[in-house]
Image (cartoon, rainbow, N blue to C red; front, side, top):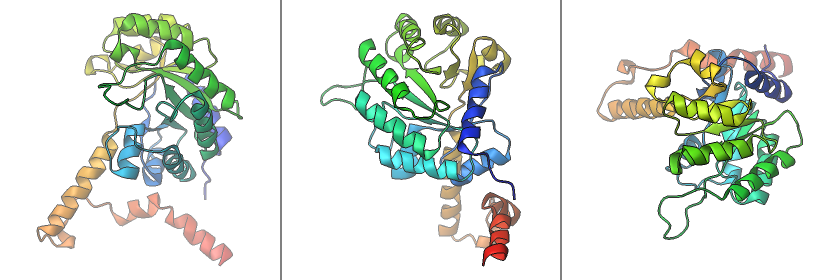
Amino acid sequence: MKRPPGTAARRAAFRAILSGTACIHPASVHDPIAGRIAADLGFEAAMFAGSVASLTVLGAPDIIVLTLSEFADQARRICRGGAPPLLVDADHGYGNALNVMRTVEELETAGIAALTIEDTDLPRAHGGGEPGLLSLEAGLGKMRAAVAAREDAGLVVVARTSALNLVNLDEAVRRARAYATCGTDALFFTGVNDWEQLAALRDAAGGVPIILGGTPAAMADRPRLAAHGVRVALQGHQPFAAAVAAIHATLKALRDGTPPSALTGIAPPALMKAVTREADYAAWTRDFL
């Protein structure tokens, strides 16, 4: 029986990614089984997104209706199940800067390796339309609060900005410069669509590692991303959508009269035993029962 790395080791492993020279793609995971599969396949890190959490826990779209306790509970399950070092999307920190501190406390206790806090003005205000950005001062307040709240210096705090999506490159550069000097360990950017934008953000980051929330196909070049300071590049959250498609297809086939023995796309027994760690439980049963 091989125990998964402990929390300290997983946080150190994520920091090693940030301090390295390569760019990695994390596995998008949503539950303990997905996390174990990612570990078994050799992923260096995993990502638990706020959108995926809302879908998994509530069956709801990503409109900030999930609570912190619901998010932290699921993150805890994923970590406990043996996932690779887990980066989580803590959205806006579930409130103001003081709520951010509570968010960091809960997620640190859950065993995650890293978390992002974003500067989007959430949740959406009444009659407000699409959300915008917090003021830079408010964004900095949240980032500093996140850094101050962690008890374990190994926990990675990532400042995330949507300025490129919601305003323009100049504002993204301004915020990158500010967030790079407030104690956070990495910068997370969404909306990067070309190499010129990335180069400008790299220069503004001043050597602070970069995480990207997806890139267009024309930028799917990990060595070049790495040369621009990118250490983690998300690829989307297709595994959850694939799971939905598989469940839908299987249930539909059964509803339409397909015999269970004729179903396709079913995990074989050997895989089910592996992802549920059946051999470990059998050994513990022999040893302790």
